[in-house]
Length: 335
Image (cartoon, rainbow, N blue to C red; front, side, top):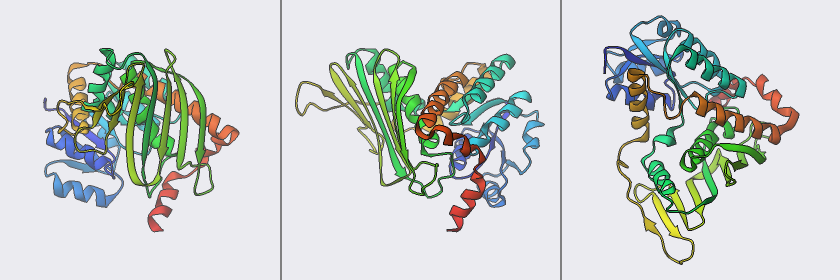
């Protein structure tokens, strides 16, 4: 690692994991957050790391070569644009934006400036996901006809546009990655809000992929028992990846034989996928190599989710632009 370092913008619930990984990789130079308590924890746990409440301290620091943006999704565009314009490489948590045109603009801006723009589609760096991708490429499952990703968990804060924007970027990017096919169009999209508003707690999206395979994505913020599973069915075999299991996460079943489950060994399963993702960003910053989950990848995912939201809410989708998410998050904490 050169002397130039990485800054992290936002060190809340997920940001603290990003901070930890870059610190352990000897790459963390600065952390920026508006919350004094968050910054106090950084100072205590990571001696020598600079902290600030002023975003301009990152923009104007020549020793910061790249910045990780871990803020609420509706703030991503303004932060990423400012960082790219200041000459910084950027790794932004998913989604890159909640507006497809903004995602397009950011991808184009990074390209024009020769900068790395990487989106936190974490599962593209997961050892079991990459092993499954290899099996599909080798023809082990046959021709792929269907994929289903279920990401069900509990979230007491709900501080995003909807569960779809919070979780589905993982599912859509992962399915596209393992199949080696881009999503083509949204067939259907439905959602439910337990708070009786337009911020959905449960969403179900059906997508047609290039090549004709169908994909089903289900996400939930209100499921007390965590369920995280990807199923990919081919003409010969079916794969199931269960990410809640500590080991034997990937199993292959013969479509024509009962009780045919075969556990597939995965390299580096003990390594945290986030560490692999952070290492990838550092490498891209130092070499100028395009990120696996680059701006174009982010744009494709956002385009699909924007289309799904319009199908789900119709004209009401534009009302979400008026929601004060910071205020709603504060209310949730006080309840």
